[in-house]
Length: 256
Length: 124
Image (tube, rainbow over all chains, first blue to last red; front, side, top):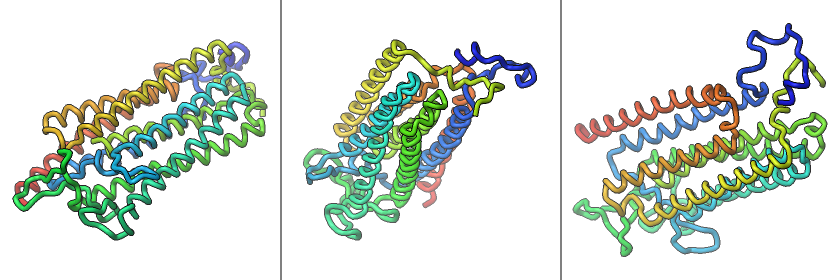
């Protein structure tokens, strides 16, 4: 507690309780409050998705089988690409926390290295999401508007991920024992999918911008002169929050 | 700008080289845990999609997924965001109001969703 021991505070400036009960700086506390409000926004969106899913009377798309593509191959690989995106975001979160740790040791070189890697990870994630979206919208099986049993495209208005049923209303299975997808799914699915992953992607984008600005200031030595790297910690809180939201988006859109 | 009337809490977070080693070890262990949980989720997702298992098994898998997600979220918030190292009161001021609102929202929305579903099934 270096701050307490070295600084003499005159009685006029202290409030009745002496030190702050939270023992954090103003900026960090406000970042936490902002994150709580942002988490409520995401919580509201995901809960709205849950409402529509429970209220829908038809067949909801089987999430695990929705996205089956992987770059440079035409193989059928469900979930693998999304798993890769999740892993990229977790790793960039790790490099961020290592940057914060280096900042606590006043290790400028370490901060530059790890924060730089975090920015790279964020950009790779954004690129991955752009590829996922463009594959969804355009699809490897055809152009923008080609739908039907073989198409696997999704737009805001249309998707073909609902299970197929035969004339008697029974589910149709493929040779692996999985239900065949291809019937028109609910519009809500596409709307929520693109809105929530898009809103999250926008958060990643702004996080990358914030990280780049902080990185430039670290390189300029602004924080070293200030005596602490708390700005890295605050940008880190936001970055970890983005990772946190993705953990939930991943569960509710790709697993459940 | 130097102001000597403000307690600099920002400086409290500084630590030495040895402490840093311990913290880094904790970070890597957390990374391993998060990765393993994600791999388990993917494995179950690929092997047992919703349409390939019975309703009851799916309900169990669903709870399992949500449990793992909350474990992952806990590790991110407590270790990566350092909320576990903050004062007890800060922890509660962040977590309690959020939990209060979101748990109620989830409860009421899912309950209403189920009733809307019944209504549509009955009268549509």
